[in-house]
Amino acid sequence: MIRKAVLPVAGFGTRCLPASKAIPKEMITIVDKPVIQYVVEEAVEAGIKEIVLVTHSSKGAIENHFDKHFELETTLEAKGKTELLEELRNIIPDDVRIISIRQPEPLGLGHAILCARPVVGDNESFAVLLPDVLVDDNGMSKNDLAGMIDAYERSGQAQVMVENVPRELVYKYGIVALDQPDLAPGQSASLTGMVEKPMIDEAPSTLAVIGRYLLPGSIFPLLATTPPGAGDEIQLTDAIDALRHQTGVSAYRMQGATYDCGHQLGYLEAILAFAKRHPKYGADFGDLLTRYSSQG
Image 1 (cartoon, one colour):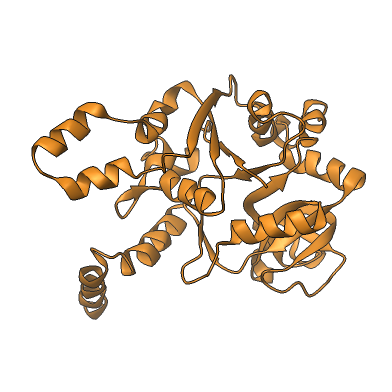
Image 2 (cartoon, rainbow, N blue to C red; image 1 turned 135 degrees about the vertical axis):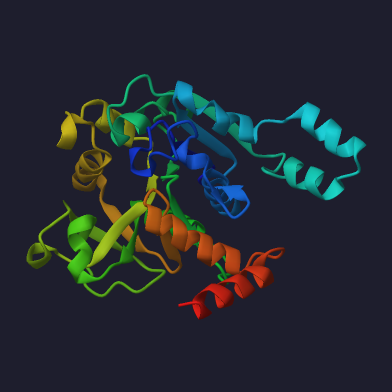
């Protein structure tokens, strides 16, 4: 069973500037919770018990968010604000650990994952969740990460999560080629290749990698010997391609929806989706939408 997840949070969040100048992009809120909390909740729901944050000296707010705040809790308790107190105490379950490790310099996503090697080890499989992508599994009996873990355990192959995108947008994504052309949502099939941001007429499919991976510990020796690639950085996709030639890699097609919160429009769409069904603010937010839509 996969129990560890690596969340690379050391980046500067340049796509979110100026909002991310002084606040980590992962701490920007969707309604009433930071983006990173939704991602951690996704991992916990799938059975993850250890969250490994690959972080940077400027990202202390993330670690503080998941740490106990004794003074604040004492103040809330003294003022009888029990609902807020319970929310604060339940940010993560008691049986889930948050572990932080530093990425000393920005050498790419592959390097960030490699920084987690001392915590994860070469003999244990683990998940990777990119924290600027929200995976929305509303209404599903179990989330897509749990479904991907099931596929991993059935096949024994590393998994990358993919979603279908319009063909005219494939040039924005990493696109997979599969040995099974019509992959249904919730199913997994072996990769025959990956192409980063292909031309529209050269894309092998319309299935795009969306920032969720399940990898064996054997990826670490591959990352350690992967030379710098695009942008002179160590690319995770290069190591995954090497793994594909060794043991095979599969793509799991997600059933839910994704929101790219590292982009302003994706962030706004996430707010709309989560606010409309929020237990406390959903009804009033719906009224706001009606009011503003009627104003043209």
